[in-house]
Image (tube, rainbow, N blue to C red):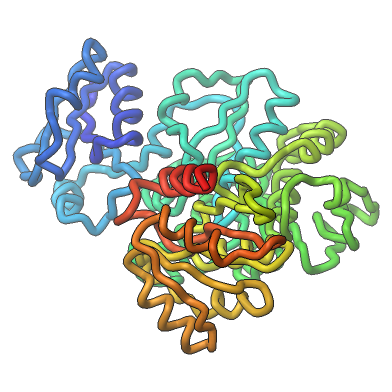
Length: 448
């Protein structure tokens, strides 16, 4: 007997979840609180795929009286008013990641953390593709897990980037290998407290068993302690400490110490990725891949060939002796700190955007001796400028749009300088997403 499933959110994630449900023979009630959506246009993408009904605007109790399950898109907060109606009706709420897992097959590596998820997921995916025949790279990286789930087989391997929003409503989601790369303040406008944010990130391991594995950052004190409390086998990595067990640095060499034996993996000088944070991402990807059964010679080959993912400390162009880097994915202060550290010389920084209730003090302090000027955009520009002033950094300018910001940087830059877009803020308000922000930055640079 078919189920009736409410899919909350009609964007990319909700559309992919709806298609999966329709393909399995269940009915979809697609709901979006935005009553200005063009209903005919939205429903046209599901023609011939099964039974789907659209609800727009306010959700009422009678709308969900025969609904068996709700699948909620990650962009929707559990504090949204309609969610209380679903909870009162005692309808289970799943994330679209949980829905995909319910139907997916094969082995799964799942990667979360505040920063580095996309680079680590992309790199791990490339390593898997070099060894396994059928590999899917899905999740927060851009391809919904639900879009690929029904294609998976018992022999396939999936690498999934998982956000805190997607972890809020998992039930039996259980990766063969999980990884938590780091936890620093982010999305506190949604999770409210740091404790809540930490617990959500750590929940990626909640269903794992002793025979499975979790990769953790030893340099993060919260994760170091967390590793002592969980069921799965723990493998640590560190860019700062010499570990008796795990992946760490010895000078420029990434090494693996295990059962008293030392194995040299790669010199960071042979990598195309810049910065200590990327060396950590590489260690995490190596650890995940090794635990997923990939031979080390294949791992070594791929990590030396891998280039930075788009929008993450991505080299754009050199213009008049100035190098431009796109780090639009640096959407929180900690990510932006890592980008500044990765710049080899004097830097002019473009920053600002949507306020996620972040604090900017530590980020501003990282400017010392590196950032010459900062050009600010968006909602947070006054807040950031005020914080910079408190820390004695006054070389601050405002711009109304990205074109003006890039032009200002070009006029103030000296030969040998670096211009870096690393906003430390979300893109919303001025741009649809961080990808659009990065693309516009790159276009402005190319047009200089």
